[in-house]
Length: 489
Image (tube, rainbow, N blue to C red; front, side, top):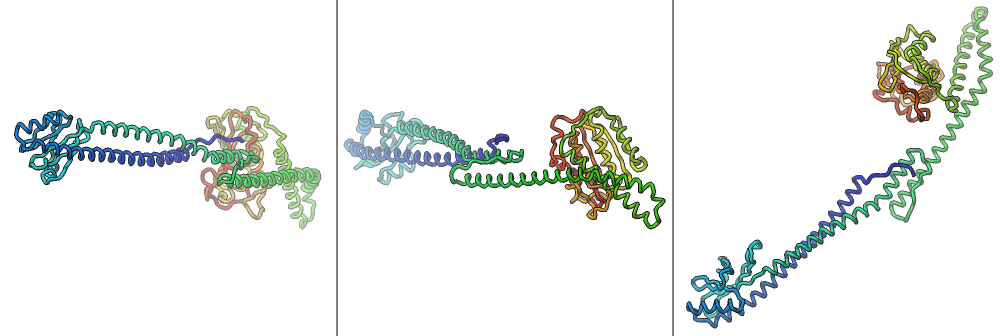
């Protein structure tokens, strides 16, 4: 299947990002919730254990009553010796160890003063992290505060936090990989459809999409294949109809050639003897002679368009003096008084016979259907040589511009204007064979301009294969408005 590979684009990135966001937020919420629950559980367990130990230590402290200075010292020494850090408050606060002498908060002191067990924790950033649980010694107004070091709990919680963060990062990376893979797999049918559509635009009408499974993409692929088959059938039918039309045109032109030649000879003889005819017969004779001339032009155009369709003729490239050729065309047809020719000498290699045919048709169209001042110019434009034929006639209606180069198309619906309706079609075919582009612009009341662009170095390989659609696609570049004019052809 032909066609460029479809780049990932924004859709794949958006799907991957969305997948990562969902997975990251979900994993983050779960990790954060689990971390908070575990932290709270550890803190509560430590507090319960410290509270139970503090109650036991308060009972033991009752053995040192009544508290004197010596007994207070013995109490502190006894607790420190058993591995318990305490603070005794009996008028003044005394710590069993100077390094473990936290400042007792007012809220804790008030709770203990009410006869209840209270606690306080140091700030998370302080080291060491201390849990202080205190109460009144039974049978005394003295207060005893038991200190528990929670550095090991803080270390465990830090490790847990690091593990949760690492797990979250791993989940996000895994989600990015899985999301990218899923987006790639999901959008792969879209890429195939894009390449298939591009192949159809390039003329590969046999392109089809594989139908796999029964999901939405399979239904889409089946619908695409049905559309492609219908399009292929329609184009094949149109191509066959076009081929029949061209064969019919060639056959008609061939069959008419011999009788028209005889009619032309007879009409020429009749024109020489018009003065000898009765007065009432002369108008009919002149009309007959004129119609025979038009019939001859039509047959000649049909023969030429048939040869162009057959593609048997190839451009005969040689150096051409473009301004001289343009002046010779105008002079040979007696248009010198109506057409102003201008242009500087330019280097051009092309087929002079075909170029003459194109320019003659364009100038003839301006003379027959345009009006006002008619100009025919030639100028160099970098690698191109540009011919322009302009008139100041009424212009061409916009609805006719897209069909102006069609065969037998005339702007005048009555088809009473001169011409066979093939002149511009023939001009376009010759321009394409010369590797050029023929375009037209028309403005209301401002006239019409035909523009022929030819490569100065001659037609390149493949220029002769330019399609009708490419040539017609140049029509209407710029202003396409216009007013009614005579038949174009």
